[in-house]
Image 1: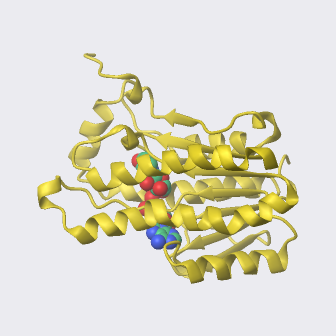
Image 2: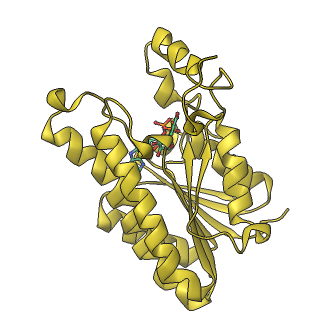
Length: 245
Ligand SMILES: NC(=O)c1ccc[n+]([C@@H]2O[C@H](COP(=O)([O-])OP(=O)(O)OC[C@H]3O[C@@H](n4cnc5c(N)ncnc54)[C@H](O)[C@@H]3O)[C@@H](O)[C@H]2O)c1
């Protein structure tokens, strides 16, 4: 019950990694507020009196501001923000449209920036807070993901900059860089491609949403209070380099 009655915000919490992060904090007796583009009826989630679901778009500043004022009308603090909402529009650069670049940058980078801007005034006043940004191993660069890699690299830079700006207020900002995780997003891939991707991972398997949620929980906990501005890879060893085995 490390997070009993703490206020946690999770973006994109309707399914996949986000839903697992939400479940982690509900299990720890926190009060969890979710903003997701999906309608609440589409949420892959149980009813829970500590869970508040709002349909909204993190790329839209009005939605973000309204959501945060809803949270503050119910709660006196924001203890943790998890920027998890993200999208993919993969292709080699010569086949990508400008709108594929804009859409991915907007959701994966502008969305977290708007959310961070909205919560930092609250966190600075309370002189505490935790922000965890879900980046991707692709921030290192990945074939066919010029838009996605740039958005996730930008998210790492945002993380490092906010870590500096907010440290004096006891607010930590860290990023998690997942490798291949088994979620609805990656299950949209051709099963053969999914298998091939698994084989490029030293551990020869995809991770599970809980592997990410457990680290979010740690970074948001008191045990992690001196970890700031870091990017932690959760990818079965893939970011270490190529393996011939
Ligand atoms: N699954 C992986 O292998 C993997 C790997 C690395 C990083 N990630 C990152 O982890 C995060 C979660 O990925 P996932 O696999 O669970 O994805 P997912 O597609 O299963 O879930 C993403 C959720 O975000 C929501 N969302 C999308 N756009 C939104 C918007 N504009 N406003 C509000 N909500 C929005 C969707 O409705 C959905 O519920 C993403 O940021 C993704 O880039 C995933």
